[in-house]
Length: 531
Image (cartoon, rainbow, N blue to C red; front, side, top):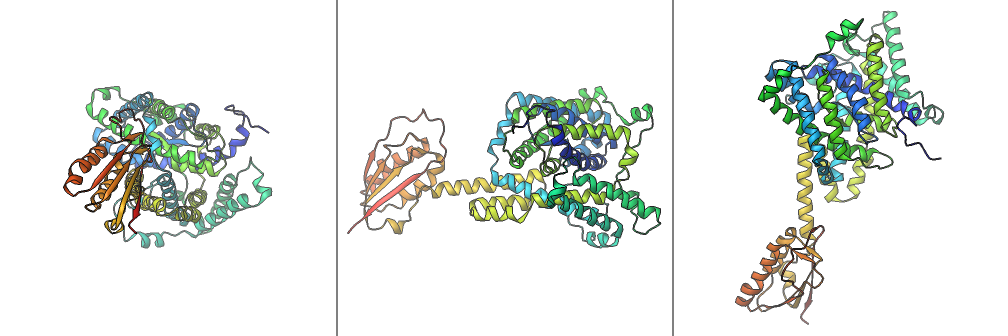
């Protein structure tokens, strides 16, 4: 039976995943706002805009947008530097305008150059970080803000484990274990798995609330305190709501620091978004491809609107997108539902949301993290060989040790190194020893020979012994890079004459200017040995 492709045609199917993302996103929005030095509700506003506005415009079926941990340091620095959150909101608007322009300039195409092993490495690293960051919440230790994706923010704290041990809360551990058991049961037992409108995460949250309320009412020492519960501002009337929303100071547009901060946010947010989109498309079971240029436009519009109504800047976020995919989302209706739930619940039942233990939400994220970083993923890349595994593993280690952008940058650099090295090996370079005794050497050029082959061809020509006979065959070659062509000409016209090497050039053209693409080029070398 063919499923409906309309936006609201499958709300019933995507409501459970939207609910799960809402539960995950709520503390993240609050935590990131707190860490950014911004009003608490600014993170929630960004989450609402990310779900309703960006979710509606984007054609990504899996990704979810909202305030991002990767922007926290930039936002905190900008607010401190500008001296007022109202001025910073102008920087968010500037960032949105720049992103919108990047979308029209089709800058989203750079995402096509992110290798799959680097993207998968980033996802596995995020999974590891989620697990490591949620373990303290699962144990009752809430010193670190929710949504922080850096393990070593201020270096390695040697007192961390002693602090963690001293803050362990048995009640939080009980709630975590019960929540994990519920989530696993909903994932493994067919009868429960078929209850689409009652996702395991919702049941876990309800049971977590009831358990803690039971502990409190019975005076049990297992009860967890307010510092281990969701903390959302409660609005009792319209005036309270007005006081929570901050509007921009438009005088900020005359401040050059606002434009510098906006440009910085635009670049970082755009790169993080494109990385997340590539990752989300990998998580999509139907492997649908997102229009990255449209995504940049959607992010730009979302950030402009968020800035105008007092929200933080945002990106497409890996944690929320991963939770969305894990919960079974099939279309972008899930992201929109999560935004609608944020809006409705924050306005109507904040007192109820404030009863949710962080331990229950930690249980949800622990399973999300495991699915991203499961051992099968590492084994998969191990079996693909070192050219795939080493960049994958390097990305994992680098993202965990630094942050998302730096880690992916390191992974990309190592991946490019292996591409260059592999390209050289595809040139079939033979050592001087293997060329000794050959009375006829044939170097057959491939259809396309790029500058990447220059080093391999240069080494091969260098190792040809004096008094040899060499045939360089370019009859099937449609393109030769200029620097490679000049090197071959220098060999034939200068060195060959000096060392009595007989060179025969076959099929070379006078011009190769019509070439447009030179991917996967290589050189094949064959030779005959003297009898």
